[in-house]
Image 1 (cartoon, rainbow, N blue to C red):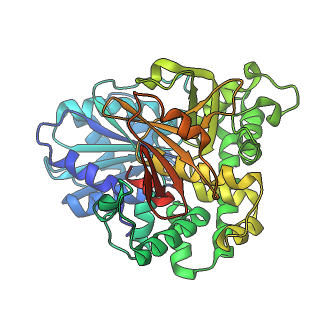
Image 2: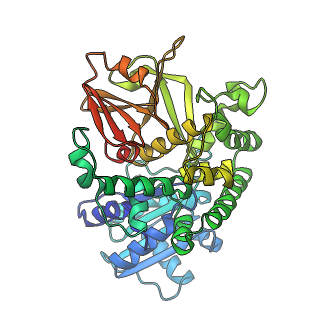
Image 3: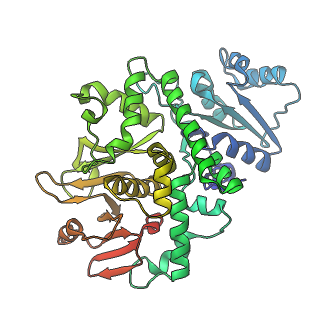
Amino acid sequence: MLRRKIYDKLLAWKNNKGKKDAILLRGVRQCGKTYIVREFGKREYKNFIEINFIERPDMQAVFSGNLDVDNMVQQIKLSMPGCQFIPGETLLFLDEIQDVPNARTSLKFWTQDGRFDCIASGSLLGRDYKNEVSIPVGYERQLIMRTLDFEEFIWALGAEVNLKEMLAPYVDGAKRVPEAMHNSLNKYLQEYMVVGGLPEVVDTYIATKDFYQVHLLQEKILRDYQDDIAKYALNQDKIKAKQCFLSIPRQLSKENHKFQYSVVEKKATARKFTSSLDWLHNAGLIDFAYNVNSPWFPLKAHVKEDQFRVYLCDIGLLVAMYGYQLKIALLSDALEGPAKGGIYESLVADILAKRGEELYYYKKEDSTLEIEFILERDCKLVPVEVKARKGSTRSLNELLKMDNIERGYKLTAQNTGVVEKKITLPLYMAAII
């Protein structure tokens, strides 16, 4: 079993005796939602009942009428002979609920009843974001599950480490990370870039150590995602959402990584494509990073909603979209050109987003000043500049002149260092800053 951090969140929810909510587990397809809930249910409960509405479409009828818990329990027992509902010892798992809105509504009644724990899960739950219905407000706790993060990837490869504890002594840049540790973490990071965090892909890499087999599987998953777009996107968004999705590698290979509609389609406008990007975001396929017009806390107060960057939900899938030859170049550290900066920027975005960070950047108009990410820490701003290769940090240096900014990070492949307010850290340190 791949060790996943979300398991601990599920366990804390189970052990909260005063809980008054069910879990709604959201996430992009194939990130491991079904697997982790199944393992959780079998390990932590005496009785685990799973209803998958794709495998058992007939079970939709259970939720089509009276949502009284006793009524639903009796109908489930009739449809699934042998299952038991024992108060306090049963987890009911409603999987693939995206097309069964009444199943989501039922979470309110399972919660109010309180005898049985309930987890619901589904992909593309936010796809029809304008017409969501039957949401049991106050009775569901939404958890977002993503593909494996960098630390989980290291765990999967057999290294039981705690990155925060291990790297904490070096995060201020004053001490160098021991070379053996530094080299090992850089190697893991290089592998993570091309493999990513989709559980099936990670398992394939562990089993074969064959990057080509990994690539073939990633290509299949990318086709599956495009099929999902064709199947689930609103009619007016089907083609446009796919165009936006496929444009991401080109967007990140430009000198300016701001999302430009003209890259999707010549003379395209925001009016034509905004809803398609929103659909991709609600489906969990992309993350947004917004430009801010002023580097002051709080960043939300300074967002430019019409200026943003788009990152794919998984760094390995992004690299796969560029083709297998690019993977060879990355693994041999031979990649040059503008695509390199976008890939390394996407790597840091992947690590930060999977930590739950909201992504912001600062690009000053009519100026070359540009900071890839700005973090909020203790009501202060921390700028982060990402360097795929050696180079100066003019933008970071300029921002560090501001009195409201106490420190900033330069992330690079090199070891640590510190010059006044500027701290140089290896890229893998994005996992703990």
